[in-house]
Length: 180
Image 1 (cartoon, rainbow, N blue to C red):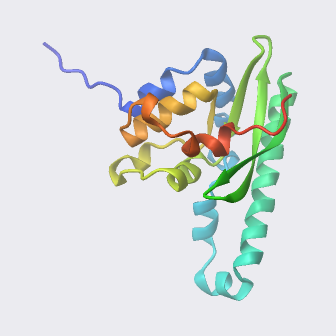
Image 2: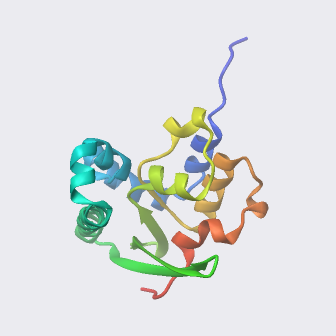
Image 3: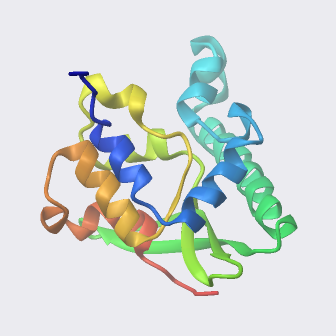
């Protein structure tokens, strides 16, 4: 009798995505680990003296500009592979404060499935839910999927049932201003 380990809940959630979503995510992954944007990696790369000398507003704008550049690269990668892709803004209210967020939206050809592509999932997911320390290493750096895929991933990370996940947790990715 051989013992086999079952996949982690995060792996199971990622593996449950459609083939189209997995193929698009693989397209990003083939570009190498530096193709995904990791704000925490960028921030850790700046020493504290530089960060304090530049000021929070400058660092924040610089990180936003860098992330926009990465998103443009991902969008262009999808366009070169003959998919429909663009950078979109989402907006929602969080405790009475208006929030906006940029992300890549892609329509897979030929299936016409609509997906979001998050190039900083590792850091952005930690902003909206409490991620247990022992699974942080399992969080994907990039994520391509639809709303149900995102709900399954959040459920796997948080331990909550998919039906229990508050829409406010997902608003950053799912509150669409404009469609394709």
